[in-house]
Image (spheres, rainbow, N blue to C red):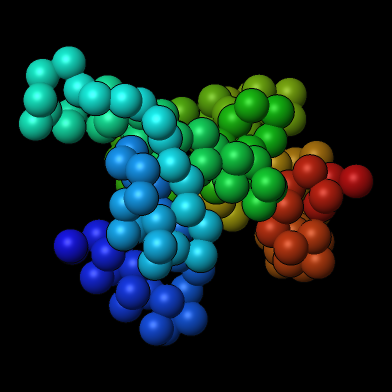
Length: 152
């Protein structure tokens, strides 16, 4: 009932409602704009939805979100170029990604990331096209935020 109520509320506010469910004829499918039925059959242990059904839903959500990120242009050459650098580990990862994607040194990547406001895609455009942050931002904006398009 909670998932059904959430989808009904989302639809009432104009959002696209996608329902992923494992029971045929589920009410969730009926209230969804896009209904995704995962026919996993009964669980090995009755009442334990964390096994087959939960695993299938997690795999479906991973595939869906990965496809969306790729389609939006947030993935470039197998790297998530629109992640938020919220800790030291992600800063380190971003520096290495920018260096690998552009052929720059890690030090140059670090400096460019700082100038870009810690935006990986912007730093890549700056280095690849030899542009200032504002010029690279214009190019990235004109490409709808899609790094691949901005580098053409």
